[in-house]
Image 1: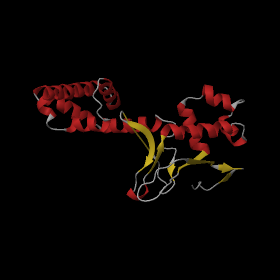
Image 2: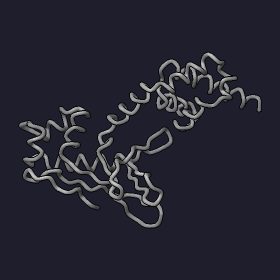
Image 3: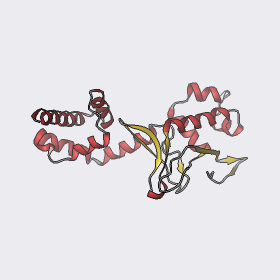
Length: 212
């Protein structure tokens, strides 16, 4: 029992020291998992707020971490980083409520696009699966004039594959496409198996959002 308590204290102390030194929650969670401590990122974040940790790490370190957590500039930086980290961040709408689908990820979670705005229409699908569908759509339509106008490249398909950074791809997707996260099944939980993709403009005319 004493050994378990000591190990827990070591984990808490390391967590606070690394977070105060600038390590991200994801990096810390990944490091713990690699060492046989599969602690979800959300659990790690909660540990940083627990008052009992003060007895382990001391008042000074505990308060320093609280100051970092409560820094409004940090919250803004986190939101900004999360919004641009993935190809489809804030680029996919829930087909039911129209809100942006969120990206759920973590050490013990397969990254997914999801919408949990209301309990009766939870929808989600694998992020890698959704990315592959969008990439396929873009590459299959690379010769389409609507796509060519946006990328302004002699070889749009090659530019997309070899030249464009993630930020440019996100810009093009946001300008060119409507992407809906579709639901299947019934009851209170809906788990999407596909997404629907359509052009935003046809011959210069705005079109309605696709319905699943």
